[in-house]
Length: 355
Image: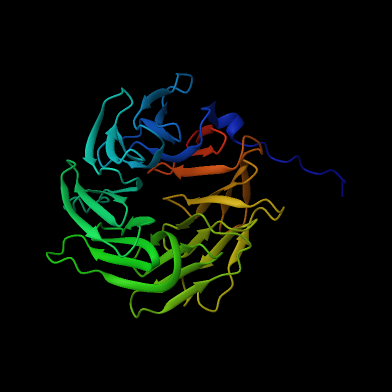
């Protein structure tokens, strides 16, 4: 044995990334479906656009809302994103400053914004947009025309489309509601569990709905038979969940490691979670699975970001600690770029496709 230790790998942000200090809380990150830019929604009401093909170029800044941007998603068409704000507007915005209001929802905050685009081979399925304000979820077509409004028993805290855009789930107090988007009569399947549910995710194969809860736990419902799935033991509130591409794993924050629940072989009931990375008493704040592989990204409370490969357990550092807790984290649709932002306004994009 030589007695020498291998040097720790350098965070790949240094060699494959760009970053800026934006001086405002980063609320959300989204990528252009055309692959042109990454967008950062900020608490000061602006959206900043990072050109993915011109790393040294200044990031465009567009003031979109009077007050904070509360939610953002990739648009269903290339070249823009959709946003919601505390001014009650649901808007479409482009890097050149062009912004249009898709819906004015009055005095209610538009906190949840999602979109759906059909995958390859499913072009006949309709592209959809959705936003939530108060107790209502509003569904729009690709042109921004409202299709329907869905009512809930309490304030909607999260929205998620299934993999084909046929169903939409909404979390709220005492559970979640599952709707068929194309139904002529809107009657939801109520998924009940007492307590405050703060966000929602749908299994990629439509097998389950999972919510984050206010009480340091996740709750799920197996849709085939309504079986409850209780996932607990977190030292803190899980703020973020993400299913893997295959649906085999559900990653979550809420601990000082990435907590991965198995959704195969009868799990997660009766099966312990796998834990990767961390372990240094620094809480994971955000998680996001790569859309093309079994690799999950995690952002921590100290500002660090890592990648974890599920099969091998290999951990790759993306960003070193500093610049505040990670508050937003997302992959591009191709899985080639990762973007993240922090509560202190640090924002970065890493190009994983570089040779």
